[in-house]
Length: 527
Image 1 (cartoon, rainbow, N blue to C red):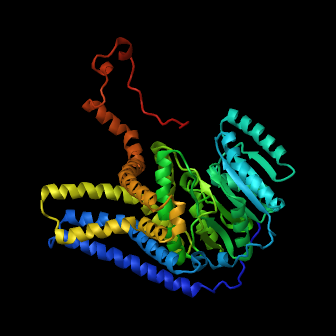
Image 2: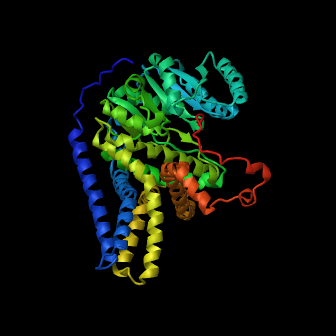
Image 3: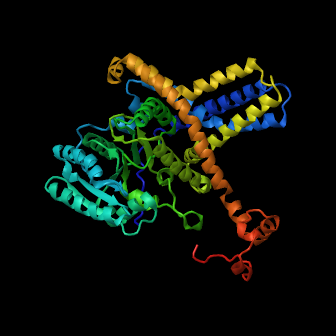
């Protein structure tokens, strides 16, 4: 890999602004958490027992996401309602990028697929190809279909379909199909393989998932933003849900649409050049990405699952900016159509985020980058904290009725609920204040009805997620001690003496088994 020098022009232009914004945000979050914990302590009465301390500690674990979301939403709402150009307020380079600037950089569009029907991928891809060809700028783009498909029959189908696609578009848009024979490193390994084979030929890369759709106008917008500011290493586009006929997907993505914009604008205001990366619907500067964002292996040679946020903090550590562009017309994604598929995806993210622990102490990371990794972990650790909080709270109510002072309990509950729903409340207020936004959502009445239905859906979905995260994390936590205990010969002999797990053949042993000695426990060298 070649070394890459970071452009230094105007690097310090907004450092003072970001410093005071971050200090203000930290003070607001810290003060709010301390105030809520103090209110919780008052609600539990003057005499704090061990059970009360446990409740307060669990409550503290649940607070970061709630409080951070609240202040992001408040700041985001103020910017959306008061700023003449909200995007330029949080991302000045994007505000200054000319819409008619010539495209000078070469961009690779990376469509990452794994065991998806090729017809489905092509259905999403062809409208993008048509739009790109219509711009007259398609020669500055090259589409790569990067397959990690493991099914040989599906792989053969891919080769046929994408060869036909490439031939059909040969005179308009360049398309290359590549299927890896060895799928190490998951999606990050797939993109790393592209970088090693083709990365030097392109200045930028736009990664897309198989279910992603990005219009050509969005691609040109992202490229022009990168051209306008050579300090940018990653620009993440705001991704919204694709219209769906699935009830699960429709309600879920409506809620995400409500909460996402205010939250993202608010967080972008103070995070600034330490923004997020979600792994798709973004643009990367390829040379610094190749030079600085190779993922280290975890202990035992394991690969990182949730690669995107690690790549973002590595890019920022190298001196390049990572920004989010909070515009809602830059691309869409398909959301899981059923609850079971949603939970599967959610648990994959949970497992990936739990791999962030070793990176918290990585040398050279920016403080905001460490915060991002920690909050990503707490997003899932909050679930078992909520479950334990409910169980202990129920136990306290049963053992000591009247132990919670309602004079403090009701205000505490009210504040928590307001903070919890703040990102959605902020967007609801913003939509209701803009006639064109109300019309886009089908009118004010239909919009409010949808918001009410989504609120009920969200209230039902949260405990489901809490339970699934708790069971999943409990399994991970107990996996090592369980493996050690159940592999110990001494424990096996003890269970045999006590008759635990006794089989009928041990009670009345058949003649053929009488001659057999007990089977010794030997490690399997092939496991």
